[in-house]
Amino acid sequence: QVQLVESGGGLVQAGGSLRLSCAASGRTFSGYAMGWFRQAPGKEREFVSAISWRGGTTSYADSVKGRFTISRDNAKNTVYLQMNSLEPEDTAVYYCAADWFGSGSSNAPSYAYWGQGTQVTVSS
Image (cartoon, rainbow, N blue to C red; front, side, top):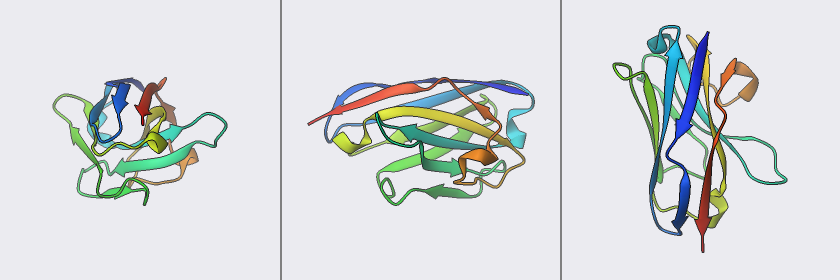
């Protein structure tokens, strides 16, 4: 079992940047594929990005490709989401999720563990 805590959200102007962090505790972090998902008001939760448990494979939603970068530091039990060139459409609650020995799926049900979320608001 793993516990996840996101941080780094906030209010930023369009074109700005934020870096989200997700700190994990519990079971060996390096064994988890990690994903970032987001949910805007009135919308379904959607995939943003994922990284395999080895860290060698990353994936992104088309809407964020080229603007967001996922990375992980297994020594710090943390996964990051660097978000650049933010747009108002990026406004959402961002969640990190963990999948034991996963490949980094874009499918939310693949992830057994979820954080509580962090709010990102991008003003125009």
